[in-house]
Amino acid sequence: MTTSRFIFFLAAFWIALPFVSCTSEESISEETPSLFFPNAQNFVLKNLSLSVDEVSSIERALGAKLKSSDLSPAFHIATNSNNKPLGAVLFLKVDGQQGEIRGGVGLNMQGKVVRVEILENAGTTSTLNREFLDQFTGMGIENVFQVGTDVKPIAGHQEISQSVALLPQKALLMTYALFSKESEHIPESTGVPEEPPDEVYEPETLIELMEMMKDEYIVVREYLRSPTDRNAAIKAAKQLEYYIAYIDYFEPPNNPNETEEYAYFQDQLSTSLARFVDILEIEGASTNSNHQWETILDLVNKAHLRFSIDDVDLDEDLD
Figure (cartoon, rainbow, N blue to C red):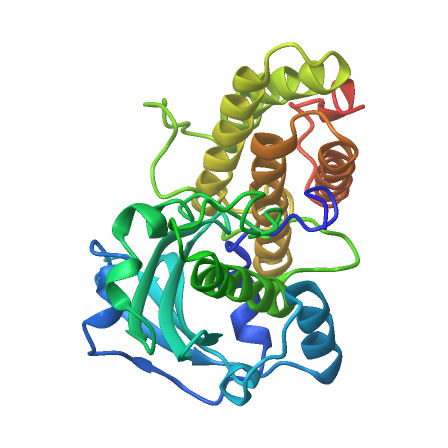
């Protein structure tokens, strides 16, 4: 598996979950998930099901058979005080030298491992020290989780080390299978950030807001044409993402009765910008980021035609 082919971001959770079949959705009172996200205010349980094709794909990548309990994984989704997702926890089992090993894996919103815990081990629990488990933190779908490659085994315990490495690998493969878009491999996101990237001036009119957005747009456009300062482009893209939130304060300029259609364009643009920021942070100027930017421009141009403002010439810069 290569990074470019298997990029996945856990931010897909909040977009994807409403559209998948869930057998359970309730608050969780157990304290175990808090080991992985101690700052979470709540955990929500989502029980999903893997298809036959997804099971086959995961088993090929894992090099091992899934257990019956893996076929309907339970995602313990951590949320903050604003009910925004922080990540998810999966509790899984793998086969060890002397029996099953049960553990938990926390994944953050970027699809990276934040913590691995061993809860039950039929072998010698003392061999699985914190230093060994902490090496999985930061690993993602691009890792192979192989002893001797990207996993350093516990001295004298290579076999159990490899068994434990299957826990985060399995968690990532299952999450990716259920929440990624295989056709596009473009990360989903939840929309505007909770806080602005910088302290910003709040516009009083929609015209003023659009002028402010044009300034940030130019920074991003120039980076994609000549990739020299990715940080500046990311900052500008995040600023654009934040500005979108202000559209809620203004009615459509020429047809105030069409608020539903107006909101639709806003939501589409917000989601597309959030995806673009995610791609830009990981890949910089790439085929994916340029493709996503074209999607954003297409949405803006369609919105401009539908809700045009004569005082702002968007066509001057949107190319």
